[in-house]
Image (cartoon, one colour):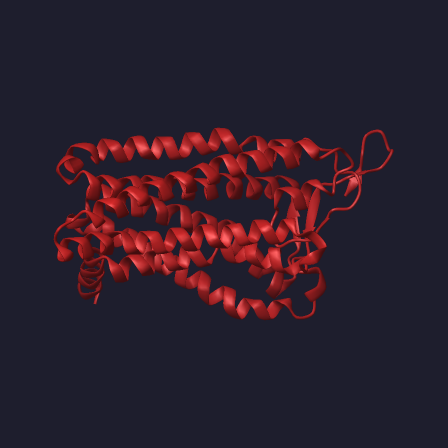
Length: 314
């Protein structure tokens, strides 16, 4: 920290991340779990992206959406987990003022982007099952481009005020962040100013973005389920549900883990502070590790593409 121009206090120029306040002597053991999961997430997503790029049969809108999801997963992983591992292994706690708010911006923007991608994928499955004859004319390459533009700009415009509101605060006292990452409230509460606007904006933006996505996703699956129940053929119904099974599993896991994190964080002193911190870290790691694996196992076209890629490389 350096002296402020008016010499009435100190001005924070960097933050210290102490991760788990009550586990300083043992927290490094968590790297035994986090490091392999990071490697798994990166390898699995890069294999999925390479397979989608090289296999001509996967050059379809559905698989392009999966590729977008993989890119978002990789970005979120690399934004959070390497810094956490550096803290555990080498005690590299400092993070620059700009670096902290850049991390905050990426986390607050790309997480809702992932939610929006799940929403677009749910719409893709809705059209495929409820309006199969119109699917080729609705879900096109241009649709994917428009969806990508929607995902980026909708979430960018809604979430960019979060780090801006936090960065404009006056940090003139403690610079110790009791978290593994630069979460908005964890950082903002270190300031000397009023953070009620920060809390309010984060609450409204999170529930408007993620909440609306979840409601629309559940609504689309209600329509899908109704359409499947009306199918006369049990074989067709089973196939229709199978195409949505992997997608629904990952959606439920994504939102369940997120909701558990939100509610444990709101519980305050009733829940140990280490629990929401750990859930926040895992939410940036477990879905990215699971997404490509579940799709690779349950989607025959992707599975065959990966096998073909591995045979070609070997």
